[in-house]
Amino acid sequence: MRIPLTIVGTGLSFLFLVVLFWPLEKIFPAKNQRTFRPNWGTDLAFFLGQYLLWGGCVLAALHFFRGWLDGIVPIGFRTAVRLQPWWLQAIEVILLSDLFVYWGHRLQHRVGFLWRFHSIHHSAEHLDWLAAHREHPLDTVYTMGLINLPAFLLGFPLETLAGLLAFRGIWAIYIHSNVRLPIGPLRLLIGAPELHHWHHCREREAGNYANISPLMDLLFGTYRCPADEPESFGVNEPMPGTYLGQMIHPFRRPRSKPGRKLAHEPDAPKPERANERFGAVR
Ligand SMILES: [Zn+2]
Ligand SMILES: [Zn+2]
Image (cartoon, rainbow, N blue to C red):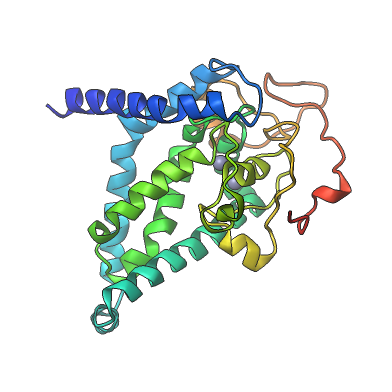
């Protein structure tokens, strides 16, 4: 019974996202790009894998993680948290969640082992709403674990934040979309595609690590927002071009064979422009 429901749910989600983002990408494009741009099929495979296969596994892993934390967080601590006003608990959960995701994400770009999984997400050379789904399932478990960690620790019921979690999900897709909307200073509060597009430029430690609101980037000096779009997206390392290849890539030993270039291996990185460093806030 569950399998047909999952398939219908996946189809409806795809349709909903097409209806939401396709017109936006056509009317306010950040870059001139065809709908069926190169590697569209690979990103579709990631979308289908996420909805049909890995979504349930990620939820099971989060459930296990929550149960494990329940056993180690003292009950007195949780009672003290619950005695606070509801709105204060919500603010604490949101800010802590942003803080954990920011540092967790920054670590993914710094630590080789974590980068092996996260580099799959960054291997996308064309960004749009579909490319947002290019993510290794273990990368998803890591990020979702960090997003939910404060709520799990504080014993805050996730149902209370269901609306916010849904908004986070849609916004995470939106910041990958090929859209540039003039929302002005609002982007300092809720983030914008141009900020995340710069996170996807070929530089490995490019800044803009915050999940949605760039508050943490502003706080820790990694906010970056040049006026134009990056010249290209992707990673400066060999990366298989297929879905299956990318799924097993993090488990393979890193090797470098001089003279051998894989399908998605880009040319040597271009030197940075001086005005695109951190702090070039406009
Ligand atoms: Zn990243
Ligand atoms: Zn991204």
